[in-house]
Every structure is written in C-alpha cells, then in structure tokens.
Image 1 (tube, rainbow, N blue to C red):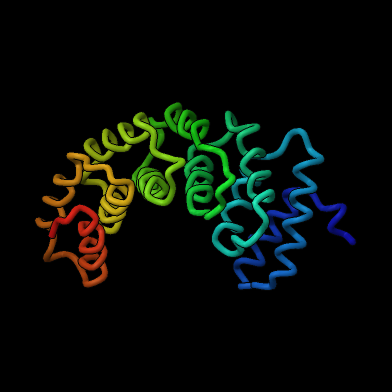
Image 2: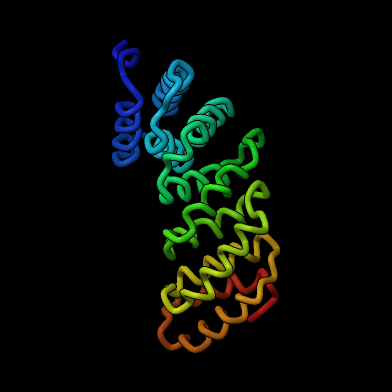
Length: 213
C-alpha cells in the first residue's frame, strides 16, 4: 500500500538495496517495476540519474520486465538528457544495448550527447561504449566510432590489459576493422610476460573475432 506514496528516489533505493542483498523474487521486482512505470507516467519531469540507476539495476538483476517498462525509462532519460552526466550517459547506453528488448528506440540522441561530453571521457567510459556497440546494432554511428578511435590512439598507454581486450572484443563484435586493433595487439604482445591466465584468455577470445593470434 505504501508504494503508492513512494517517489522515484525511494524506488531507486529499494532497487539498489534489493540487488545488493540478492533478493531475486520475481513478484517483488514486477511490483516495484509496475509502480516505477506509473511514477514515470505521472511525472512530467523525471530525474535522469535516478532513471538511469533503475535501468541499470533492472538490466543486470531482473531484465524480465515487459518492454513498456524499459521504454518508459529510456524516454524518461531522453526527456532530460541535457542534464545527464557523461557517466549516466555511458551507463544508460550500456544498459539499453545489453537488454534483449527489440522495441527500444535507436540511441542516436545518446550518441549526440556523448559527442558533447567527449572531452570528459575516461578509459572506463570508452570501454563501456565500445562493449555496448558490440551488444547492439542500435549503437555505433560513424561519429562515435571515430571518437572512440581518437581517444584510444591518444590514451593507449592508460588502458590496462583487461580494458584493451574489451576494446578489441567490442570492435570485433561490431565488425569494425579499425587500425587501432593492430596497435593494441602490439601492446599486448609486448606485455605477455605481465599477464596472468585470465588476461591472456580474454585477449585470445577478443582477437579471435579478427582471426588474429
């Protein structure tokens, strides 16, 4: 009953806590999701950060909601996207690409706002964007690909080995044969003696996308 009085911040906190205590009760997640959808529909101005947080945790822990739920969250984020931080943008893009939901709209608006904040991007952001491109055809316009390539070229030495393997995997999944891949390969080869089994395995999987070994 009390859920009717809850605001979006309250729902976001419930979702985060439920995720951390591994509460995987489908009826609970569905009930909260239904209330969140109602909240979004009844509010003309919604907090972008909270919407993105809810989207992320549902994507990771309970991606079984009806499509309308995720579409409502996407629209809520887009409504105030000009106020979104670059971290919120990257996290939202990852969530929307990770979801198997076919009805989600293209992410053109998100890509445009990433361009506006490209000077703020760091290695974590760029890795997340690249992996997202590999997840979904809805992401990966020429401008975004160019932004990622330019960042990697300028900051290659700042990426750790796991991040570099993620970059290769993202480009490979998208079928983008970028010249930056050879630079990453050269760096990986020069660091073989510093890699543990996990890192070597990740690189092997990533480079298989390009038929390289």
